[in-house]
Image 1 (spheres, one colour):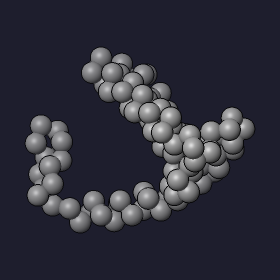
Image 2 (image 1 turned 135 degrees about the vertical axis):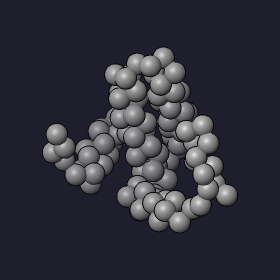
Image 3 (image 1 turned 180 degrees about the vertical axis):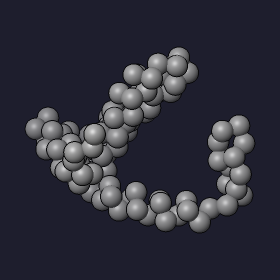
Image 4 (image 1 turned 120 degrees about the vertical axis):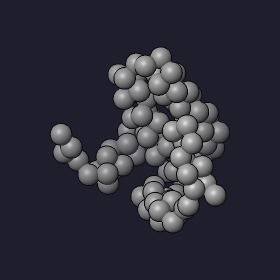
Length: 102
C-alpha cells in the first residue's frame, strides 16, 4: 500500500543523505559509481530470477539517483516530468522486450 507521495519520499531521502554528508558536489563521482553498483545488483537479480533482490535493488537505484540529482542541484521530479514528455512522443518498436527508437 502506498502511503507517501513522491515528494515526501524525496524529502526523506535528502534528509537521510544530509545526515550522512552525501550531498556534497565533490562526491558526485562516488555517487555515480554507487548508482552503477546498485544497477548492477538490479541486473544480477533479474538474471538470477531473484524477485526480492530486484525489488530491493530498484529502491536502491532510486535512492542513489535522487542523491546524485541533489548533488547536481537538479530537480528530480522535473527530470522525470521532462523525460515522460519526451518518451510519449517517441516512435519505434519493441524487439526482444526492449523498445528501439526510430
